[in-house]
Length: 398
Ligand SMILES: Cc1cc2nc3c(=O)[nH]c(=O)nc-3n(C[C@H](O)[C@H](O)[C@H](O)COP(=O)(O)OP(=O)(O)OC[C@H]3O[C@@H](n4cnc5c(N)ncnc54)[C@H](O)[C@@H]3O)c2cc1C
Image (cartoon, rainbow, N blue to C red; front, side, top):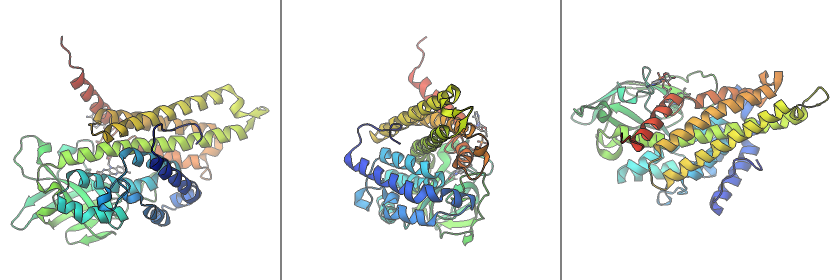
């Protein structure tokens, strides 16, 4: 992409990483994405390639064997990967969130135990808040951990775990009995180590099969069932119970930048496909790009791509500067995902009947874009977060 979605002020290292990833996406992801996606096939070779490039350790500090890069670098890498195939970005995203939570909130022993092996991709992270009866309303979590003499026993059911079957470390948010008045203060994150795979993977812990999804195929999304699962107290993230909600919200805040980046990547690809097709397809004696109605569509699509990219970069830079970015990450996620849905839809229309054919990439993007309106908090939830933040900031003196 020559002109759109450029980022000013990147370091040489960031430029180098992005150039390497862009080449990898063009050579190793885009040519295989359609076949793998239609077959719902896990992209094992692509994942190995990402391990070799060190992408699993991109944001893990150098002292733990990672590359120690920023959220911005990560987000720009994700944008490139999603331009190739969103499912591949899904493989690293939950891993990245768990690594972030460990880095920020883990005990020294937990960091030492997991981060070096996460940096190589040997340990692969997933995270679980949602349950069959709740997603937006996190504080209503029902899965419960009860303290016994030698640790905790967990019972309950989790839903929608991205990488649930292909990860071996899941950060799980559950209810504990802290006696706090506010429900969110009674939540604790446990670090559940488990083998990869499906079925009863450990006594009292079952990962049923993959959920069959409309898009976002290849990457597995599963349930997770606890039935008397026993876990040691030192597997509580940060060592102290009752802090889980705060830990997870910090995780999803970076996750929201990542979802915005994915949306940018898909929108960029939809635009690339549309502008190419519009110059090739002829109607009424000229390329459709020469009809003003289509040219204006392209102009609007490109403007949306650019606006979303800039807001995503802004939210990432804010978090990297050490500030809270709840409002900005919410805004970036909201606009990028809504624009992505619109740009993809327009690219689909520009393709005419061919957009409906499975031979054309736009058909896949059309099924991927809607997920971004939901994952890491729906648009309604982003608006709730944004408006709350603004009302705090702009308190009326009247
Ligand atoms: C493919 C996929 C992968 C996922 N991966 C993960 C994962 O790895 N880990 C994980 O924990 N979760 C994951 N999720 C779950 C996801 O985060 C939730 O689906 C999402 O947060 C929405 O929750 P819900 O589905 O329960 O919808 P609900 O919360 O039931 O919402 C339903 C509708 O009501 C609206 N709504 C809800 N509350 C309000 C309100 N207060 N005001 C206005 N409108 C409201 C919502 O915007 C939505 O339109 C995944 C979901 C999918 C589809």
